[in-house]
Length: 242
Length: 244
Image (spheres, each protein chain N blue to C red):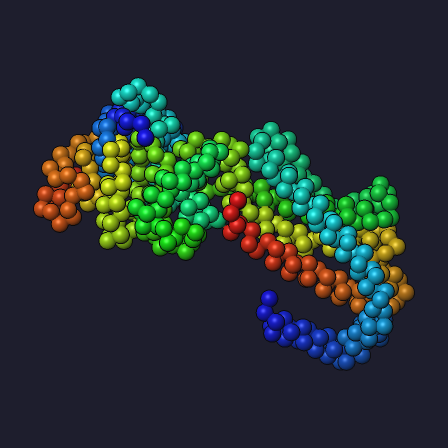
């Protein structure tokens, strides 16, 4: 992996002349976790898709830059709420999808290491339909890591999981994505409070930065400062809804 | 297929048929009963077998050619905007034409032999196969395409590694439909002009008021079609679970 850069997105977006989000500046610190928290329809997923250079259906007026000046989109790996595992391919084939799509040989040493670290060795020859939701999301995380990119974009990656599986996945993700520039789009204040080195609440008016708890991520779910931060974030979100 | 329901349904149909024949007392050249048809079938079994072989050959070759053409066309349409613009309207329009009306001209062009019947079968199944596979290719879950794009995949590799495998179940459905239609195409070809085949035999029997033989040939065709469908269904069931 090349050294993780910081990223800045600066601009506004509209859909057919109607403003999707007002002019904003979002900075992702190099090698840190940034959480973008917001309700449905405020354009947080659009921000992520702009960073990934994926089609958004919106017109973006602005720019995306990296601190090292190199292009951003080709250095990202992407993980969505839907695990996007190919149902006809085994776990290990799914993990190595990126290499196959580029016509390269998969890095087998890396594959073995990730199978082990994600606890997937016994499942390597299984099809996704034979796995539980949590296992499938672990495969998706392992596939994201097979790409070995310095920037990781996560779009509500754990929101379809039950509470205890979600907490375990968050711990695993923090451990494995260490040193990368990570952005998590989420609607869950608890997730933002646990994971964000920086937390931004996105509303139609723009971004509000919230000071995260001092503890290092992943923060303890039951710690008072995590819970306080979570409730502060929830108030911000509800104030916006009222 | 479950054996018991199939046997029960067959017995039920035969009983209803026999009851109608007994109650109405229709002459045998109007409606022969199942026992008479079975008897005729047995005495003519070698003749029927010979004609069945001819029809089966037409159907299987037609199915193979039609499926291959359908696959190639769908791939072309899915990968080229120009092809979609030029060919898609024509394809839809040809479906508005009664393909059966082409049977005489096909016989004129290709003669009384095998090929005019194969051509008829191909014409009938080409569209369902093309359309089913094309739909599948155009409806790849968008999340897969997003993922592939972030992985810097080329359109060609996305086609072979994602769009085609994701569309294989649709292709399977198209081919199963084709297996039902192909025998109809072949028989229509035979009706227009042939000296062999189950369609020819039916027409011949009908013309000589040998209604029992007509029924025997028709039921044989039905069994042939069902067998073909079951075979194709078995072959295509696992399309899409396989790795590419």
